[in-house]
Image (cartoon, rainbow, N blue to C red; front, side, top):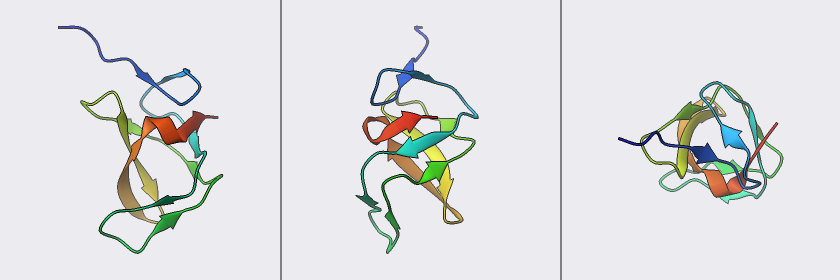
Amino acid sequence: MDEIVVKDSNGAVLQDGDTVMVVKTLKVKGSSITIKQGTIVKKIRLTDDEELIEGKVEGSVVVLRTEFLKKK
């Protein structure tokens, strides 16, 4: 089985524990949380999907699409 390579919006490879920045203001489905552009998400976790990562924002664990993230 091939190893999953997760990349941010600029093509930089992401790994567990990386810090990323949100490049676009996002509304979280099923929640009243809005993640503003420039928000820093620390210690991300990769998922089984190369387009999704998990991270903690405002005390809640959210799944974010990598197309809206930039590695710090």
